Length: 95
Image (cartoon, rainbow, N blue to C red; front, side, top):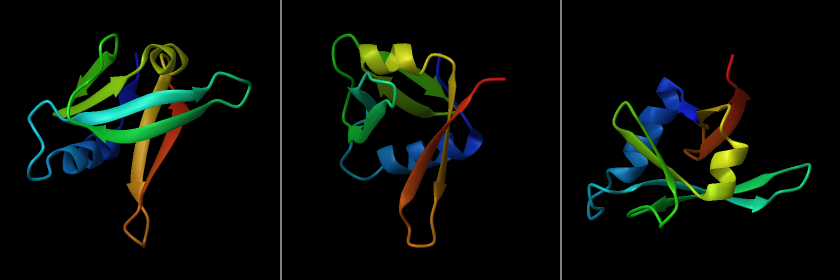
């Protein structure tokens, strides 16, 4: 199952705890390309969709569509904020 670094958990919580979002809000990751070079879309979502895998870690919630859940099963999600304030996500392989 996908795991989150401490940085990723903190950033996901910050994104999904904005005023007006329900407690079920989380980050939703969907697979856009199942090819050799997979691509993923990352969006804030009020709730998961039917069939989504739910990853909850350190107060952060991430929803994965079925294909993304399979492709990210052995991965670690990391995140950082660049000098311009944009969030950058990175994937690593679980040790």
